Length: 625
Ligand code: SF4
Ligand code: MSK
Image (cartoon, rainbow, N blue to C red; front, side, top):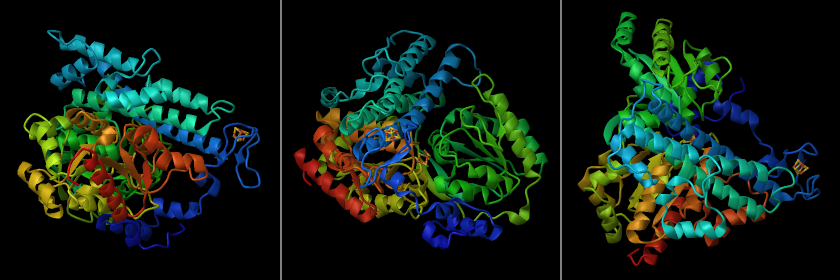
């Protein structure tokens, strides 16, 4: 194994990660860091976005000497097409996840499952009314059937706009209408993006980018929002609770099962099966003190938000969690699951189990989980983990730390309830300048950055400036491990945040959920804009994905910008090979949609940029800086 020559201290800010990176090196196990070294330097054309392989007259690369591909496409066209497809990939991922929730709702409505049910009937009534379904005096099953049909319809071609556009302020919708950016159907926009970027179609970079934005809006206000809302309906709307994070949540004396991926449909069943008294007894008979479920990435966020299940780690912790040697099973659904986890699992007694036909891993044990057999399959999986416990090699176990406390569960419903039933106190706190603004920090880890240095650095800088922070996805674990997700963290915040969050007993950094749950932040921004009778772009808010890596993060960033939210990225997408595309991303969009991207790798400077932006927006609203 070629070693990454950099010390673990340079790769991550965390002690638990450093210990496991060093353990991997001592045991000769390759991780993401060694593989990055082997892949570096990356192909310059791919980095710039100027390589094209969408037809077999190519592949082509655009250079000063050959400024056009075989078909005549220039750098602008090639870069825009590549970026458009990148965003479509992300939108497809989130939205197909959303569709899976509609299919579970369908199974409930059709009586094809006894494992899932409608848990939050009030929420189903509320969201159904929002999308125009009659709810008065009707049976919940009938409402659910109509909601199911309505949301399936949002994926197709028969609507003029996706249903949750009912939440979008009129001023914003007018902008989208003028630009031809109103998202009509999730699958339609994604398919059209693929069509437009076929050879010989949309050969005008700005036009391609407008459709990329429309595709991302179909994700944010369509597929993702449906995913979030139906997850709440089926599994319960999150309310604040306490939990824990870091590798210390893995327990030496228990059967440990890590759930990884994004969709709660499988992980909720694993959790339920792990509480089956018969299986718990089997675990005890095998010598364990019990069965411990912990989360990774976003399926971890889903269980954390709703059930208070502890979080073992974010994206760059997934390999390292297995390296503790105390993990009996990793159970995955889809997205952000490194194939390397299969190899690392095979270095231990760890069973690697995949559960989705659309996300199979060579070398994994496959369970085909559907709504009609989910619990039964989950019990088999948990039993496999119990069996594996006896094979654990105690001499290779190293759980490097004690867990830290975190507070979770901040859905919009929970926030409004904490505020006494309306957003008014928040609006007043913003008007008074106690909360100067808010920034959602979302997204991933990327081994190109010191793990979580920017995620944590930016959050700390912002709260000092009295800017409230909302976190989702992998930033959740980062903020939690840094001690930012507990009420006492107000000591790290400015005086205004200290006052408001202190009075409410909440942290200055609020856990808002998983990647699809960024839709909760969109909804909050829309509600705030409506409360102030302004557009979303007039609000003192921002978004950031400091350490992003995935297509989904690009879709999120673009739907945030297209919704009028100024959005920071710690590094650029692969677009720098086109001046036209880069200029549109970092300034041209401002004129079109009232927000743009900003690229800044330094968290302190990024916080200053947000500060400036928030000052300007506050002045625009007639408020003090
Ligand atoms: Fe080359 Fe044009 Fe084909 Fe792309 S579409 S591979 S630029 S010929
Ligand atoms: S899991 S998309 S690494 S946040 Fe949602 Fe984390 Fe980014 Fe995946």
